[in-house]
Length: 237
Image 1 (tube, one colour):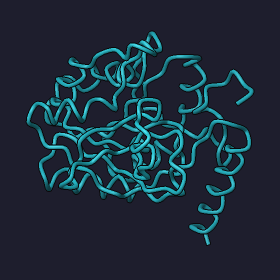
Image 2 (cartoon, rainbow, N blue to C red; image 1 turned 45 degrees about the vertical axis):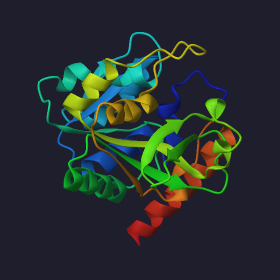
Image 3 (cartoon, rainbow, N blue to C red; image 1 turned 180 degrees about the vertical axis):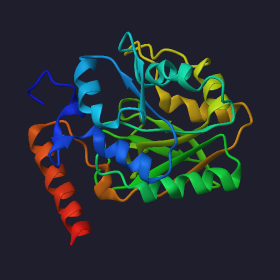
C-alpha cells in the first residue's frame, strides 16, 4: 500500500475501511463487536472512536497469523460458550449486512458449529479454495500455496466470512498446529478440525463476486472506493 498505516485505516468512502465492516455488523444486529488490534493499534482505535461503547478491543501481541488473531479475542467472549460469533476481516469494506444475515440464518437453522460463506469468482488466484467431497459437502479450505494443480482450478473461494459457535471455536483453536513454512496459525484450518471432531460445518455460496475484491495496492483501493461510493450514492437516492 506504500504506507505504514494499517491497511484497515486506509479510507474508503471518506472513512477508514474498517468502519464499513463495523457498520455491516451493527446493521445485521450484532450486539457486541470485538476488534483485534496489533500493529499501530492507536490508529485503529482512533479510526473507530466514533463507535465508543459499541466496539471492544483485543490485542494480538505478536503477528502469528489469523488463528492467533481470533484466539486473542477469546477473552472477550470466553464466558459465553453458546454465542454465535462472526469472524471477519477488517479490510473488506464491500461486505453486505444481508450476507451476514443469510449466513446466520443457515448457521442457526442447521445448528452448525461453523458456517462459511463462499463466493465463486472468475479468477480465484490468491484465495483459499473450498474443497468439497463427491457428495458436495465441505471437506476443507486449501490455501493457494498448498493446492494441487487440480485444486487450483476450483473457482469457489473462501472470502473469510465465518460464523462459529463460540465454545466449538475455542476448542478448535486450541488444536491448531503452526504452519511449518510461515510459523503462523491459520483460522482456515478450524472448520476441518471441527469436522474431524464430528461437528457440523455448513457452507453457503452467499458472497457476491464484487464483494470479494482484494485491497493490496493503491489501485485496488481506488477501485473499491469507487464501488463503495457508487453503492452509497445509490442508497441515498
